[in-house]
Amino acid sequence: MTPYESTTPPDFQPTARTKIKRLHQRAVFDRETVYEILDAGLMCHVGYAIDGQPYVTPTAYWRVDDRVYWHGSSASKMLRAVEKGIDVCFTVAHLDGLVLARSGFHSSINYRSVMALGAAEKVSGEAEMLAALEVFSERLTPGRWAELRPVAKQELKATTILSLKLEEVACKVRGGPPGDDEEDYALDVWAGVVPIRTVVGAPEDDPLLNAGIAQPAYLKQFRIG
Amino acid sequence: MTPYESTTPPDFQPTARTKIKRLHQRAVFDRETVYEILDAGLMCHVGYAIDGQPYVTPTAYWRVDDRVYWHGSSASKMLRAVEKGIDVCFTVAHLDGLVLARSGFHSSINYRSVMALGAAEKVSGEAEMLAALEVFSERLTPGRWAELRPVAKQELKATTILSLKLEEVACKVRGGPPGDDEEDYALDVWAGVVPIRTVVGAPEDDPLLNAGIAQPAYLKQFRIG
Image (cartoon, rainbow over all chains, first blue to last red; front, side):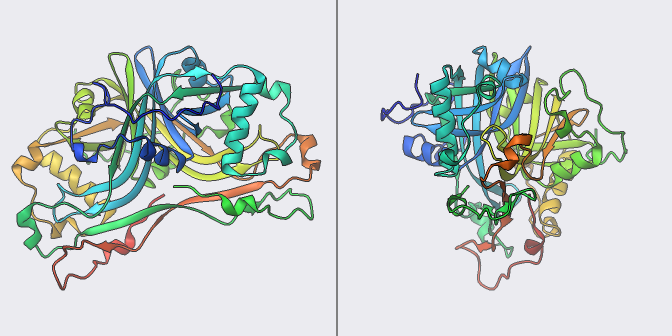
């Protein structure tokens, strides 16, 4: 497996485990929407079970074609458990707003979420690992990878990269104004949406930055959410 | 169990399952920090396993004293599984920044996260449920609960509220500038932090809002992150 597969697979088909049973009007399974939601984020939540106890670990991730990747220290409890091939649930969710309906019952949140199930695979081979790390870096800060010193051999050894093929995927989106009970529209109570967004602030120089190093242009391109 | 226990329990003690093994300088277990991180958020990720398959569901939550609460439809697959008393992992994570070190290896993200393990309990009893929902509403939009029509009996029946006592808790925080290898500080590459924040936008009236209803003052108080 390389991080550069360039297939264009069909849209996702619900399985017994990913079929949205409730509010199925919120279920979206087309591949383009799934990729858009994934590419808008930086932090996922990976779920895995050890001895029956579920754990949910937030971690950085990135997508290449029909795979998502995440990484960390080879000593990480999560990565060591997951690289053995146990099933994971990879979830990304963006919070978009607080939905205030005319009743508490219909109040809600606006969000975009993707959940992918499957067995994660370890990315092995130095070239494959470096390629995956380069994609991650270039996605966030295009041009920076070439500025950085080469990755040391022991740094690669200390790093585990996992990937999950996007096959069993559920996608749920809620957007727009509240949906109230017909009779509640007569009530004189405010209803609407309070938007919530993730924004990028002005880059902060490391206090130990050498004199004369300007902020690179790629910092301005960084977007999230 | 009521949502109004007013104990002030001691700080959290690491267990074999929550002991932070790596980068333990990032591990914080004092109760005040844990509460601050939880109170800054609106969306958690609840992990649970069904037939060995882990699932991670993003959902809204709130905290009262030493418990966290989340809720949803009584028909929800997640809530039905969890209310049977299976173990969950409740995780909240706030993304605070992209940390660009002088090497890819030491680049990271700034975040604040809390993970709580245990068996969730169902909130039962109409009065207890209403009290929990009122706290949730008032926390987000103080004063709004009194403006809303009463919760209908069948709405309560259609709602499941779960809670988890904060006992087995891990808290991890990374903040501040990158930490580079000593020899890398001589490199002429930009290093620093790109801050990431969650912001609240201007409230948007429901297009179906009755004429003459102004935006209430509590909307201005809503903060997140």
